[in-house]
Length: 253
Length: 177
Image 1 (cartoon, helix red, strand yellow):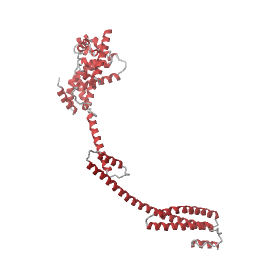
Image 2: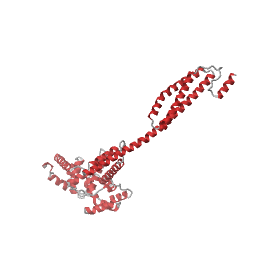
Image 3: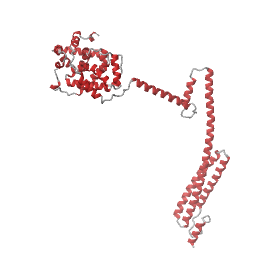
Image 4: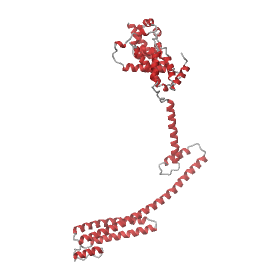
């Protein structure tokens, strides 16, 4: 490192040349003090101590968050979102330096929790099953009522059209009835399946009742489809509404 | 000259907004800063403006100053002065007008001494700014390598290398003349 040693003669010259310049501090000081009278000091900048402080806050928040998450996960059951965290926590506890007896007690607790969870799952399942059955029954009832109403209305309208001599319109309604009849026949199988699966006797009876109604509506539709074309002169068929009968009979007269 | 402990006391008062304490700080260091800057810019009025800027910056940022055992308050002030000077060189006109250069001998406390070493001043002024700065701090202001390193924000080894190159460059300039 000899090359780094400064040249003595030259450095001596530099030191010797360090002449002071004349300087009157007063005008500069007056100017400065006038300027700083209206100038605010900047707030303390961000130092390492601040970084340390904020890091500590972050770390403490993280620890609190973890503790909270573990506390929430403690009662979670298989299938819950936090269950993996619960299991992770259980593994941590099992890996702690505990005595064999303590470990066994912990394991017993874990198993008890799992078995209890099984009971809860069964209870939940029963409640869900009951809900599902009620829903099935409601759907079957709605299907039956809608189908019956639709077939009745369409049949009436078809007869009206026939009476007015609108054969094309009546044929169109016939094809609608045919489609409804086919769909109803198809769904009868599904409803039959529901009936077979249902264990509750009341529900079973209600499903059967609706199924019979659906079958009757379907047969009614089939009859309407197969009924031969009636010319407007012919007396209105028996099952037409009284009002319609009267109107038509007045027209025919 | 006050002891560093007394200086720190004045700084503490100034940090709390006491402008009179800051005035005392100005009295303590303004001459040193003025000497450093006048030798570099070569113009009395510009130098006074720069001294004013340095102390304004010091006042504004005083709360961010933290006393350290390894660095005196003067080191912090010289750091501001050095960066103010760099800013000045960066933003000033690329060509120097005749009225911008003054014969510094008229401002010297000892004109004879200044005349005697005029050759050295001229040779120094022709060096790159960082060479001038390192020689100024190390030999004219008599600051340690550690202090110079802090002012110029370089490592101590970096300062030693820079000083070696600056002296070599200065020697070559003088030998040419």
